[in-house]
Length: 152
Ligand code: ADP
Image (cartoon, rainbow, N blue to C red; front, side, top):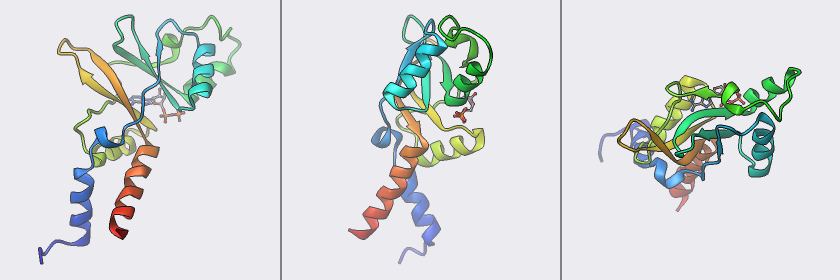
């Protein structure tokens, strides 16, 4: 008997579940894409968050569903309005890395009140390459995985 409480055992399990084992494929759009392009991409790719990249493929921003809705409420021409105008931009973007635990991601999503994070790799030059996507759905999958593990 280890003397550990159920809570401690659950926490240990969670810390062992890594981002790289649960991440989804990222959906990116170029910075010169329009808000209209962003809306189409969001529907076609069935995601709630788009990552905006520059010409070198580096992360420069994030666009959420409500960012696009807000932009659509005005009288602007959505086809000529660039997403780079309405996105949340670096350095105000919360990211995670493949080796992070699912618990760290869950805490970031809660504390920042956001739906998703880009999974990034630092290019060693101050830039980030986007290699994945973590959302509340991925957290739910990890939660269910622990439940299934317990049954078998
Ligand atoms: P929604 O806006 O559709 O409710 P979110 O809650 O994820 O979706 O986004 C809320 C706000 O936070 C948006 O303005 C969005 O641009 C921004 N945002 C989303 N994800 C991140 C992130 N990982 N880091 C920083 N800001 C983010």
